[in-house]
Image (cartoon, rainbow, N blue to C red):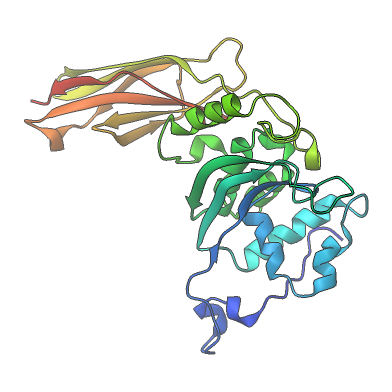
Amino acid sequence: MRGRSEVWLPKFLRTKDQAQGESEYCDVYIGIPILKSHGLCGTTGALKLHWGSMLGLLEKQEHAGYGFGTGDIRMFLDYLCALNRARGFDLVIMDALTGNRSGPANKVEDKDAKTDFILVNAILCSRDSVAIDTVETLLSGYQLDSVPLLESAFRDGIGINKPAHIDLLGFDAFANHKQWLREHYPGCMTGSYPFENGWGNAKIQDDFNAPVDVKVSCKREGTGYVFEYTASEPTPCIHKLARIDLLVNGTVVQRIFDNLNGGRVAIDLAEYRGQNVRCRIAAWDMALNCTLSEETEMKVD
């Protein structure tokens, strides 16, 4: 029956509070998944990594009866979420130096054949397992809604899967890196980027159209300062605008989730009085592609 999952974990994974005075517990639980696609979940990252903490070798091998072509995949996702709720990671460091395009399998009779992978040259880090798996899915070139584990985990309160609310450091570095992968691994077969289409029902997407016409100006108005900004969706528009970040000296001072195509926002710059400051905006879309405006510089009176 869906909606009820019973989870058994080793005692050493308990938090100090869960141990209730016993000596066997874990202060900090760190997950180190690797970037790869998965035949059941679409992608396997921090959320799926908890399968390794499940007791019982047979249950692990058979995916608790919800393996390829059997059972109800939704029950498998429910159990993964239950594992994460029982004891979530405090920190996740994802090894994305390489990326397996079609899971660990070789798909050929020769078991010694090289796995279908590419060099991704990235490392991801987050305290939110759902957020890092969302970024992993986009880095793999997949549509978020084709990996249902992300939405299941979000609904269970495990973390955030909405790109508008994910704080991805580096701004346009993520979009630039995906474009670099696309240029270095062209095509749609073995050894190409994005990952394999349809593996685990994950669907690839063309997500390289970043926001355009991203501009900002900042001026004194009355006793304060006002940002005037514009941003547009490209043509064709694959992903709509998600968020606008206002930056002062490279630091985000305010985030905007409405009126994304343009507007005016009053900003308190009192802490910069007597200094020259650099102002710009970052426009994000729903695939975490980011376009930075040109910087404008002014002196705060």
